[in-house]
Image (tube, rainbow, N blue to C red):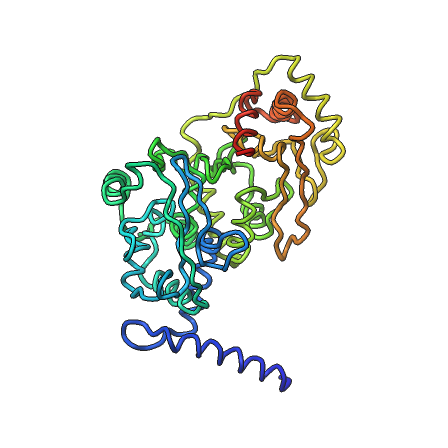
Length: 414
């Protein structure tokens, strides 16, 4: 090893020791380097930076607005700042927040912080996350109070009622009848990954419908498609390798990650090792199919389909090709595209209206994007072309009404 390299490594180790020497755990001893690295990995698995970093803000310093159907909640500062962050929190304080949804200074947490999923993390993993967060530079960042109407802004009552009805604390229990991969995948999906928080339908109070978990749902203004191994909308036709490739690179021959999933891939899944990604895929492929087949053949009339075909030929065919075959690793194919079968076309309408860039990762750094067409296509034309795509190239999905496109356009303009 060359001397300059040895010096750089020594300096790096010294920096870690300096950081950890001031973050002793409750026994008075600093955390081990391996514990910190384990925590760093779990922070990536949980996409903590995604929610706890405001646009153009300091990483993990909070303040990012989290839209909900009831109002806006702002993420907390989880840097070790003693006044505005978690610098004064003990290990057990942090465990209580992650496992029980209780904050030292704010009382009950809103479930926009996914403690209903984080509760499944085991105690050692939670403390490893705390050990890593304690090594971050403290950032003084006051976080805004949530913009919620009464009585939802009355935490002690509204959140007590919500927790009583919908929250069950408890760490993950492995299934002895399943493989090691399956159990690891279940732990990551049901725990730190909190995949069902977006990919599940919710009731009127924002709680996941447990009997329909992973059948698709709204998250931050995007519709996250079903993760169940169901034909058309779900993952039935995806192989294990295709799921791994998508989570690692943000793209495969079927699709590219855009919208809310773009950030998940960039900040979370692309940083996981291949064994864990494969375990996630094994678990997802073993989920039961949807309780009912909700996606049916389009019922649009011939005039709408003809109009959509003309829009497609004029605006889309140059990239996605005449038969919707796309271009491998560049333009997603539309034939048999699971996203086009989404039971809720919100995300499809958003992509056409405002465009979307795809995830940039080490394996797929291109970041190909699609331009928006909302400035030159009306709601009826966008609805027609989406209806055409959902009924063509072997696809079998319901028509998209112009009123749905108008609704999505109004949300974007807000």
